Length: 551
Image 1: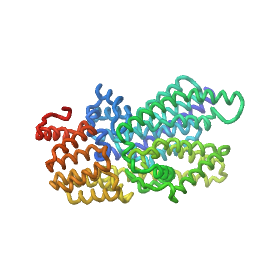
Image 2: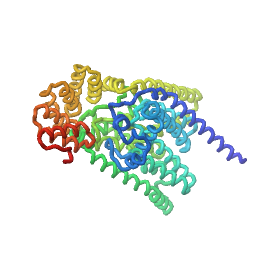
Image 3: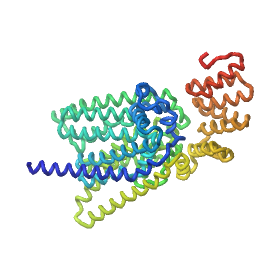
Image 4: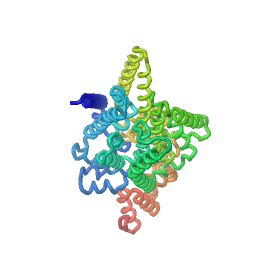
C-alpha cells in the first residue's frame, strides 16, 4: 500500500473515531430527556397526541395526508412520517419519541465532526466543533421537544447534503451530486428552513473548496457558469418549497396572528435578535421555550445600535476576506440561515426562539473553529497551546453540565413554563399555560389569577381571554365569561375556540340564533370541533330548524 494511501486511511479512521466519540457523548448527555413527558400544552398535542393521522401510525391514508395536508401552519411531510413511525414503533410512550430525537441529534453532532474535517479542519478541532454543537444548551428546544423533530430531522439531511457536496467538489461525479441534491430535497420535506442552503453551497465553493473565485478570464467565467448550472436544481427546489410554505401559512392565517406587530418593530427585533443569538451562543443563560416579542421600535437606541453593529461586523468580515475568509463565510452562513425565521415575516408572537439557532450557529462555529486553529498554528508557545486545549475542554464540560441541568425544565408542561416565566419575566404564553394547568386541577382561583396575569402581559394575545371565558362559563359566571369571549373574538377573529366560547355565552343568554352563527363560525375555522357541531344541532333543533352544520 502506498504511503499516501496509508496516511489518508489513518486520517479517515481518526475522523470516524472522533465523530463516533462526539455522537456517543452527545447521546449520553441528552439521554435523561427520554424520561420526560410530552409537552402537551405546546404543540406536542396537535403534532402527536391529538393528531388522529399521526396516532394511527404508518397507514396509506396517513402517508397521503402527510404529503397533502397543511397542519399546525406547516407543510413538512417527512416530519409527519417520522412521527407516524414513532407511533408505529412506540405507541404514545413519550420515551420512544424522545429517544428518536436524541439519537438524531447525536448523529448530527457526529456529522458536524465529519463535515469540518472534510472542509480541512484538524481532527481535534473538528471534534471540538462537533462537541460544541452537540452539547450546547441552545440545542435543548430542538432535541427535548418532540414537536421540534423537524429540526433534528432536517439537520440530518442538511449535513448529509453538505458532506456529499464536499465530496463532489473534491472529486466531481454524478453520484455525490445526486446524493447532495436528494439529501437536500429530503431536508426540505422535513423543514422548509433549509431554503437558503443553495447560498451556503456557493459560500463553501468560494472558501474553502475554491471551486469558484473572483477574477477575470475565460476560466473564471467557465467556473461560474458551471457553478450556476449545478446550483440551479437546488435553487428550483428552494423556490418551490418556499412558495408552498408561504401559501400554507397564509391559508391557515398564521401571518395574521401577529398583525399588531408593526413592520418597524419586526425589523428592529430582527436586527437585535441577530446579536441576541450570538450572545446566547457565547453565554447560554435564561433560556426559555418562549421569548415574548419586545415590540422595540426601529428608531430606539438598542435597535439603531444593533443595525450599526450589523453593518460594522459585515463590513469587517468583507475587509478580512483575503487573510481570514472563514469569517465572512461563517457570518454569511449564519445570516443566510436565519433569514426564514428572523421575523420580518412574523409567524407567531415570539421575539426569538432557541430552535432557530440549530443550523445557523454552525456558521458561527465554522468562523470560530478556523480562527482558533489559526491562533494555535501561529502560537510559538507550547503553554499557549496547552492552555487553549484545557480551556476548550473546560468549556465543553460546562456546556454539557448546563445542558444536563436544562433537561429538567423539559420534564413536563408545568416545569417548562415555570422556567420560562422565571427566565423572561412577564410572559403571556407561560402564564396562560400555567393557568390552564391550574384549571384542570380544579384550582380555579389560581387559574383566574394566572389568566389575568397573561392578559396583562400581552393584552393583544387573545388566547388567555378565550380560555378564561371558557372557564368562567363552565362555572356559570355567564356575564363575565361572555364579555371575555367577545373580547377574544375581537382581538383574533380567526380563533375558532374563541367563537365557540362566544357561542356558549350567547346560548346561556338565550340568544340562540346568534349562538348558532357563532358555532357555525367555529366549524368554519375548525371543522373537527365536535363540541360546536353537537351544540349547533341542539340550538337549531331549539330554533325549529333541525339538522347539522351542513344543512
